[in-house]
Image 1 (cartoon, helix red, strand yellow):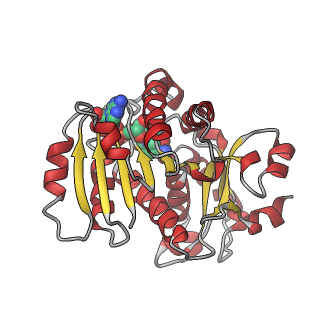
Image 2 (cartoon, rainbow, N blue to C red; image 1 turned 90 degrees about the vertical axis):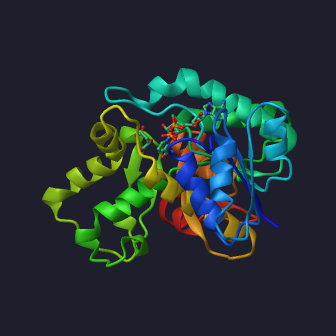
Length: 298
Ligand SMILES: NC(=O)c1ccc[n+]([C@@H]2O[C@H](COP(=O)([O-])OP(=O)(O)OC[C@H]3O[C@@H](n4cnc5c(N)ncnc54)[C@H](O)[C@@H]3O)[C@@H](O)[C@H]2O)c1
Ligand SMILES: O=C(O)C[C@H](O)C(=O)O
């Protein structure tokens, strides 16, 4: 039995992400929580003929507790998105408080769940979540993930003309660092299968991956940031976690984690001087920094 929960389920990311989770045969129960509209979103999704049993909760009547109790995996896209001219750090004041409140709920009602944080700025909301879980005495660094999969998905997509892959998702490109501008570092040299990028195109490709979020914010012109591609990426990461926990070995996805607490991460943390960093992680019951990364960089 797998119970998945989406916190912020009525939003631009929350709705398509909930749709993908509802459609997944890997999920037996799906609980939606938001401060608005969850009964409607849940009623709508409940007509889909997939196995997952669906419930929707608002804050009233212990909604957060009811949504989270028994959760195996909790995905958090709750919070405000950027508008043109804003950086992700401009979201900190509002979103830090939202994430703090929701993760307090996780600490109390589903302390063993895998927690996947989408809310920006990821570089700060994940450390906040870690502190909340630590304060409650339930922090397991192998269960807390900042979702940076959209950076990976963008990298796979933007290099397609050079990778030559008909299906761009079949190219593996580690993207490391963080989730904002210059901190997003696509390692095209480590791509599998390997391919050549012409020297005069390289910097522009790196820049496009680093600032792909801005591209969407600009195109949406005040109506928010990436939602559909993020739902795809968030679902891909959630599905990878579920498949790995169900026993599939060798599933590797980059994620923003607390390195000193993830097997294989301590030395990278010492070398880089940072605690939180996105690196390829081999997912599963014994989540660890992937050997390929370890071997290549340490
Ligand atoms: N990690 C990434 O790669 C990535 C990509 C895209 C967007 N994001 C971030 O995801 C977040 C959500 O983006 P969006 O476009 O879905 O925004 P949105 O405004 O469309 O949806 C956010 C939802 O959160 C809900 N919410 C607000 N406070 C809440 C609370 N206390 N409890 C529960 N729900 C609450 C809102 O009611 C809303 O339904 C933003 O912070 C955005 O920057 C991250
Ligand atoms: O750019 C944003 O603000 C949203 C997200 O982090 C993204 O990369 O698309």
